[in-house]
Length: 389
Image (cartoon, rainbow, N blue to C red; front, side):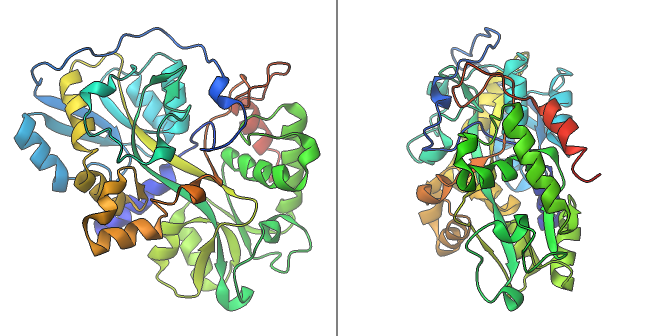
């Protein structure tokens, strides 16, 4: 139970992710982003003897690191980070070789020249078994160059107390509109990236705003999202950033509906607490391994990425953390593995095509627009500060 608690707290830390939804036709594939020209590793050499990792809680455990060290001689030295900001800061010290980055950290590190493009030929387990929706996304594949090896993914779902709602709400309107029957018992995620959830709702209900990607908002679109968030503020019961507090609120009856993760509902272990993906879709998160541009342990880093991409190891990380594994070959390895994959929609690309994984907004409009400048994460941070008053 202690390890599951650690993994749960790690889920909280997963910050904003990927630039475009898989299957979305928003022009993001054609966006050029200015990044430093850093060479990639050309050929494997001798293992250096150690590997220093910045990771989310639950990603690096003796259950799989001991064998890696025995096989390679690379001693694993993990450092748990609590936020994407902390990951970026730690990686920029030059003391770490590899990071389990969420998309906001990944893109910042790529643009900042802190990580190197990858030679996928040296990572044999980066294979056809890696979920299609986790390959080639802009958060870790910039200007056609891969920088990340997928680890796992998850969606931000609508959690509801079925005893009260008598069925799954079909729309997110129950958390956004002032006539919601659950006013005062609604919870929302307390972070600037939650602005993207408002943008997803507006994309569906107010198409005239022209939002094509919830992370590519010009000033007018950002203003519309903030107006919706301020409207929501009048019916919010609680904002949450602590997953234990979120669970407690649902279990205690203070909250009836709100944004959540599948792992939180499972952790609560209450049959009346359920989750659904409403008609509008949702936001979500994907994680990847990225290698430092200045690492002295590059061969150990590549060996680690290959090792953790194996079905059994990638699956162990996914089960421990509470997410869909990147390597879907894990799903068929046992009945328990299949049950886990089904719970987290690991093999359901139609499900994830309705998910916009978190990303840090940048001034380059990742929906392909060039006639306007989009708002940055700093703009979002400033705007978020006005929401709660």
